[in-house]
Length: 146
Image 1 (tube, one colour):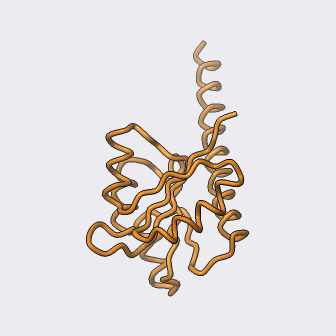
Image 2 (tube, rainbow, N blue to C red):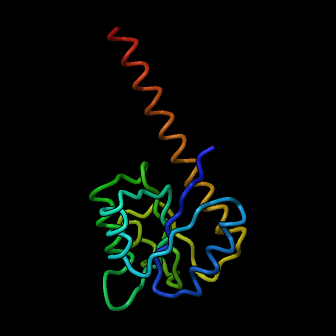
């Protein structure tokens, strides 16, 4: 069985600890990045592609979560790399800005462990459904052109 990988992008270590305490007991592997730049670097240089990314919106001193999401969307569509924005910004315009950047989902802080797990599960299941649909489409094409 493959271990599902989640990347946590946040400039605050306490937030990483909360996310890890929610996801690791379920068997998910969590990779921590302290900035959007670090996340993009890990994906580009190490060939590491998580199954889902959780990112804070506001990260001072560099690329924020919105820009990180936009850059990732240039490389990966949302059906192949779900991205959940996790932020203390909970106003409607913040959520719209995150959606405009290409995020798949939004979780407002503070959140419960249950709520975070529900959002992560929904995105991981959606990714699996999309992958299965593509696989079935490829099989049908192969059958049709055999």
